[in-house]
Image (tube, rainbow, N blue to C red):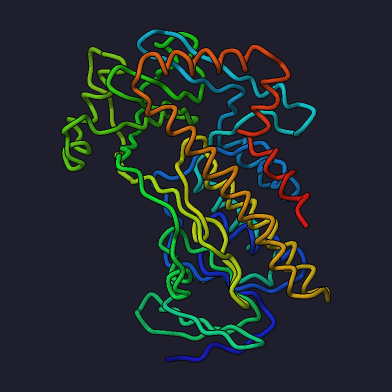
Length: 404
């Protein structure tokens, strides 16, 4: 095993996705050296998160990242909950948040575009940040004053890297969390979600369609989310249909035809199944090792809070490390946990769980009551503002900042 040149002052980051790269960019701006170790040789361009909330755009704006995302994405000024078979909907206009954010809308843009923008920014602006792709973290050890990480290079050779702190931002299957022996408390929902993309222009065929739509149909639910050049559709297996059957092109085609029958088959570009989890670790901070993003908490994607919450973790944690490197005590890491873990439970897991439960409801009367309540909120300026502050993650950030 090769021994990397010792650098006990830097921060090691396991995971080079949006959370790890955001943390690295911020620490680099604070003059703190970082080494990012990422297993994937290239940024994955598969179907992952695609919704950026207003405060996330506010946070990234000073670095020029938001402008790049806007250029590549699609501004969604409204979002809807739709009763597809009835043609009814409740529509929320994010313009009501103009006094609370510089970006009163959601931005529809692929997660990989953020990762690539962050990498380019780091390469051009931050020589103190090193990103080593194709290096899979295998294990770590820590002492009173440093952390050592073992990572495997693309040829399968192990290497040792040292630093003052380790951020575990290595996702839902986190090696760092696993080695810490932490239980990932929570549950996995029974249904499998099938995500498909198509170039079919739903907005030209369904009246009053928003760019973000959570929809009821007779046999369950689906969602329609528009990106610049395509639509993402979230579908679910039929009762009695196996997961294997549900991800076949024929099954996806049939479900799309149920949403909107067409003379020609839909051009299905990509199909990806995934399970929905609601989990959070008991503790984010373990000595010199700190968890962030999906390594610390995972949730239903309904409402687009997962990636955004992880980015908010990165901003909070980077600020705590900045203060520690400036001479304040390491107990600031406990403040990071106090500010972020309750927020993950209350505002991310619980809110996304409520979103999922609402859309999985099949009882007609309960759907009707839910839709009427949403329409009431959408039509009342004060109620709409309160609801949008919550669902856009502005309230959660304010609550987090108030915790001491």
